[in-house]
Amino acid sequence: MPRLQSLSPIARTLLTVAISVLGTVLFQALGFPLPFLFGPMFASLLAALTGIPLRGAGQISIGARTILGVAVGATITPAVLGQVPQMLASVALIPLYVLAIGLVGVPFFFRIRKFDKVTAYYAAMPGGLQDMVVFGQEAGGDVRALSLVHTTRVLVIVSLAPLILTQSMGIGLTNPVGAPAASLPTAELGIMVLAGLAKPLDGILAFSPGAQAEMTVLAIIVGADLGYVTIHHLTRLVIVITGAPILAALLKIR
Image (tube, rainbow, N blue to C red; front, side):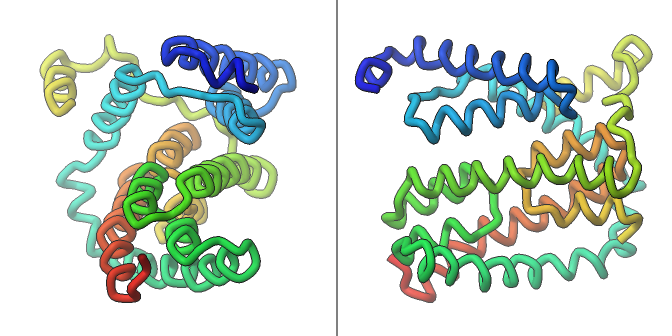
């Protein structure tokens, strides 16, 4: 697709938006769950796999993540912090869970998929998509392979999780995202603007190695304990993001 490769950045962004809209329309027409989330993800992944040059929405994406970050941060209240001691038993499992994923993933990517050691290592780490790609790039890994592996990981997790919740557990994806803005006190809205193994449902979402943002949205939609899910995902990301480069240095992965 040489002509597409020569598109300007703005044209690539518009092409990405058009592909995302098509994915949304298709998922809505087929009656699939969360079409505005899964439709663009599937469409964009398929487009990337076929070599179509995609491009993010820049500041719009940053603004959307900022809003989501504020929504997540608003759930970390003193009451949630007071529940942390009750979560220690399951939070303590996260290092073991990350280790188990690494012990399976690294040999798989290195010996079976024939990735180099750096790419295999960072492809197996269940951290943030952008973080693992950046770390892998700085260590000399294959950026394209890392991007596709982690995008696929996130897509599979956030696609399977709703199916498990709706088909196996009978949980509907109907919980409102939040109270109407008009019902919230003006002072609290101002604060949020400035801020820029409890149950099976919570456990499944807390230990699903998907992207933190997408799993947070899913937790909101299904009515899970957002504070519980968020704390576990933040713990996982802190462990992987801080520990992966250190362990890579100790193992002399260059």
